[in-house]
Image (cartoon, rainbow, N blue to C red; front, side, top):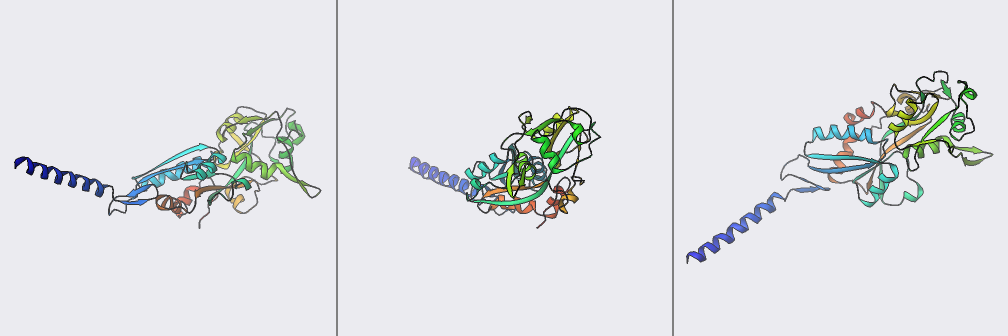
Length: 293
């Protein structure tokens, strides 16, 4: 009799334990996250991967969002725009980051674009190179393709020009190619090829460091990477500033995109919706052009 009662008690304890586990896991699912039962506090994990140009902005945005929602963890990774687009398509990341428009081959993959900012691409020279204050888009193109090889040809010292560029697949390079290296001749669109002697770097930071350490270098980088170690040149007499980009006066500019596989839901939607709030766009406006909705 005692053994029978003990068996019944054991079964009841087991049922109660399973019920508690199910209740504990029974919070509302939000994307790949859960809301704790009955609580409005967001919890979960988001991975943002892609453009190294977008990466610094994503880091600032995620820090602000995580401070508001301590239960959310956001991982920000680089890898380049192409990698970010692929990550969004395959589901390797909840959000892909790109600093260029989608190529035709990347369209019709179920991606939804969210333009979170507009960035300018600054053409930069060494801080000691003060003789060259402004270049035309055509001059920049001829320098980058190796047609102009000496600074004296554009008003600078009698010294060879050392070209610095990003790697293929970089969103910055793709945008720069589209905005600067492509041109029309006799009504036909053409594209100038990057000089074979260019020093190729894998990030905006590496381009900045290379130009900062070479008095005769020229390169290009995202507006958000500008600092006193390099000097941006005017393009067609216009400085690369957020105001000039917003007014359409500075032409070398491109979008910053978040990409999701389909319309975002749950915690992903909560985060992206927040990115378009005045609070988040104030962060954007520190280095880029805001896109309030």
